[in-house]
Length: 213
Image (cartoon, rainbow, N blue to C red; front, side, top):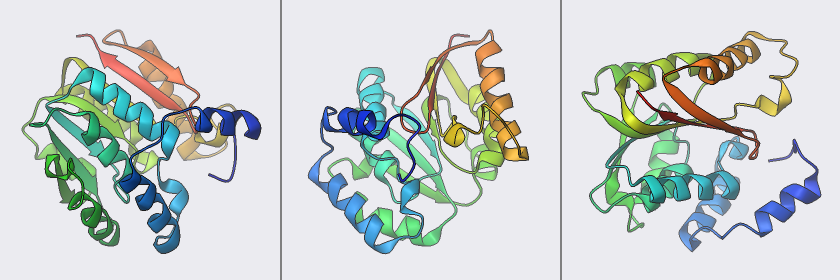
């Protein structure tokens, strides 16, 4: 990430004092930077370890990721899941899928991950599942659509985590349609009586939502 929403020294301090990801994930970061366009889309340690910790605490049996990229966040979530957990990942980039699968094949947690190619809204409409955990990190134009559909599919007590909800700070002074969509998504979540949430200023913003009914 080339831009920091907090002081760069504080961001670095938080990074250094967060437990390291496994060596395979460190290799995934390096290979993503070497071989893939837009490597800044990768979640990175602060988000990844947060996802792993939430997953380890929550122990989801059925999880969903909307927007997989090269697999860093998926492997982080899967690392915390029980051995019989199932993580379904939605991704539209065939090259990213091929790249990620090479790491899933080498990971002890890779068997938990199932990748579905295609537009996420179409994919999830065809899923007959009750979700325990969802990570949303795909096209921002559909964030509100993703959230509303996933919320319907999530059991009471289930978690929904949305990434990039600060959108490089643009949510404070929105200027575009996408800015407005993220502002509206954050507002709806904060006012939704069916959930409780905490908005974390981790990296580009994480909204951690728990469905209560």
